[in-house]
Length: 240
Image (cartoon, rainbow, N blue to C red):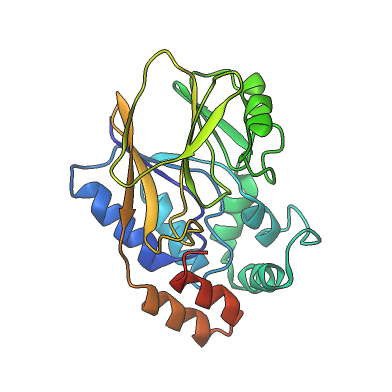
């Protein structure tokens, strides 16, 4: 079993394509597990949804997915994010809109639970503290979980209290008796100071973390061409 775990693609097709090329260089993928926010911020929402749907797999809804298809409002979004959501909503094809509207909030896939934020607040909570992780573990019924939303690759183990740490490029986490929550980082908009797209790969026994270079300038040009907020474009060059 080889599954690519992706999160926060954010309509960044160049980054998503680079991640899939990297993942498939080691062998064919059996599935993609997507942890939400396929759309938002970036310039190619329909293209990213179409590419994701070419693969077998499971996906959950993120806050940007929900807002773009009308399942939630944008009151909690900053001004630039809300503007990008409104633009995305106008661009969505009927097929893309229907896909986003049907996405579940939480999915169980074998030994894994997939959710965008946390099991306490699937669409919004950033799982960054021991207290938040403890609340999540109390609701997690599987040995392992995958979350997104923070745009940072993280490993969290169920200690007392749970401990969280950054995941390094190339790091491999063996799956055993210890319960874990793992965050693959962001494909389309990393926020840990590393400009490269992030994802994880599950091989049946372990999960490895990877960073991949992509053509940031191409995405920035595409964003500028459709007048998305300049700040959203510039931050891609900063990894923030």
